[in-house]
Length: 364
Ligand code: M6R
View 1 (cartoon, rainbow, N blue to C red):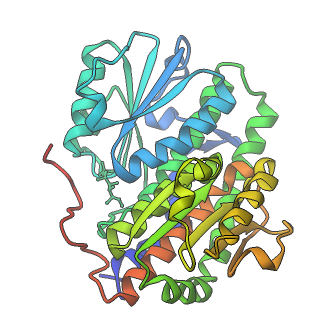
View 2 (view 1 turned 180 degrees about the vertical axis):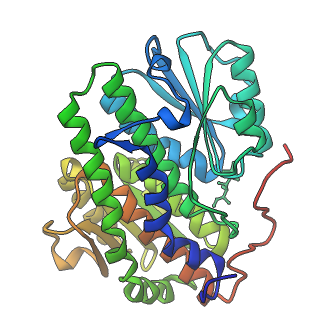
């Protein structure tokens, strides 16, 4: 069942190149993203002036990355709402609003309720769901299925990256269909996405160094993830992954926020995972890393190939294959998943079924 892997989580982490290709390739026609087989017409995108993404947990974190990509390409406002909050608010929704719900199981009670509320208020609804025929899929006007295959481990891994790929495809098609992106540019973006998938094998093969880091951090009480832009959104995911299966307290911070309070918690030996994959804010990240290193933090730096980093600012350095800023979340996510996995493993915990948590949260 576990295909030779000791845990479902490790198996599912390693399945990502395949699950991503299964999700992306059926939606490629003449080198362009195409949703004809998904019954999602281009007419859906015309007249949309605003997007709300609503989901829970890891699916919501995928939404945080999706927001940045959608806003970049569409130049319309996108907000990301935690479903359990959104459903009890009095959300402003009209016909020009597209509500995107994201869910692996398609059964999360709060996400389903947020979807129903959105429909009642007249929004167009599209869901990104893994489980075929699930409640959320059935309730939505349109469905873009992630073809990640069954995800058994409670910690979501391959569903998350598949959700990201659907959000990117959606951003490409939406931008192309509404004339906001030229054909050649759209073809190029899709190539970049496929390139991001092709570098994952290389990242998966770095698991020894990640395991070594996990042994260094496994007995720590607190851990911080810092980043800017997409790296901040990804930090949120790195933090939930680690805490849910290793039971180590962790927080994700926008690196620029550190000096507004959190830096007081960074003391000698406190691990800080610093994600610095975004070239446009690289120098700003390096200054933030210097700030934590000056407090003797234990720094695990993640950068992209060719990016200079002086050895004095980190304890471990993970180098990702060369990739454009927008696509770095794919390989970087794999690093964070492996870090959570090995930390849980070396703490002797039940990796696939952490205490107090369920795979499908059908209670409110
Ligand atoms: O099935 P869903 O995607 O709707 O589940 C949402 C969350 O419960 C889920 O992502 C949870 O946060 C994961 N256990 C995180 O790894």
